[in-house]
Amino acid sequence: MINFLNLEYYLVAAEELNFTRAAKKLYISQQSLSNHIANLEREYGIALFDRTTPLTLTYAGKVLMHKAREMLDLREETAREIADIKDFNTGQLTIGLSHTRGRKILPEILPAYTRRFPNIQLRLVEGNSEELDLDLLHGDIDLSIGMLPFRVEDVETVPICEEEVLLVVSDGLLKKEFPGKFPEVKSRLSQDMDIRLLEHCPFVLINPGNSVRIIANEILEEAQITPRIVLETENIDTALALAGKGMGITFYPRMLLAGREGPISGIMQNLGLNCYSINHPKAHGVLAIGYHKGRYLSRATKEFIRLAKETIIAD
Image (cartoon, rainbow, N blue to C red; front, side, top):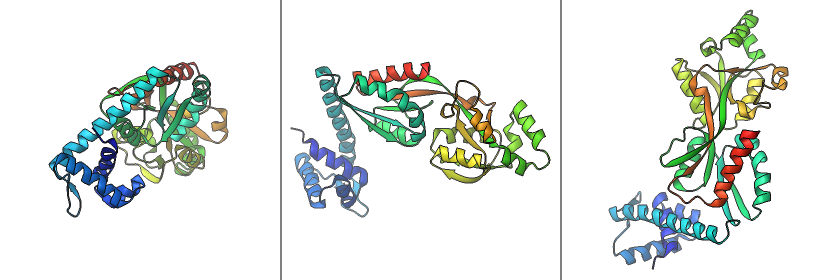
């Protein structure tokens, strides 16, 4: 009979390649972890680790690591499918997205979803695009909401709405960087936004790994601009606020601005912020929900996707 606890503990140890660190992660003693590993090695009659410094996996250990992940995933999928058959109103749904996108999207979807499925336990995982793609690949989240493309294999995507990344520049920065030419430069940007006009200006950018930063890098690289980055931040709203103070130029999704379906909010203009559409295909994308196509998709998960499409497209 498969001892799943042994496999769970082994998998953490195999990923960490450090018994002390693995035991701490599992909230058990190192001796207890060693006992579980020893049980597996006795069961299979072969060493799983080379007790070297640093610790390494034997060939058998590498094979078991791959198979253990498959078996644990299958156990999880089976339990969820059986629970879904029994009563699809119960279960857990784990959603991954950036915290700024969550601020905009989740209040539009979750109240209606929780009213309809009050017994579904919701869990949010917030991170950048690269982190969430890996979480989706490894089964740590059920759904990920982000801009296409998702950069991992075996992910099915459901388009939700169009999205545009804008260039945000303050009047204050333009006056400082183009003394005596401010009206002319602002007029040129409004008529035909050419980012190369701003190549010597400072930039405040979101950290690498985020979808907006990936898009920004591609746009800047194609324009042959090496940006003068004065600050990087994980919070895109911090970047926007600093852009508003004239610290640098930034990139920001239209969806996160008020009045995304029409002219940019007058509040932005009152702050002296100019939001420009970028003449580049990468700046115009699609927001989508992604899920691992090899994993069981519960009815509760399907309902979330359906509700998200209806809510966001209708908004």
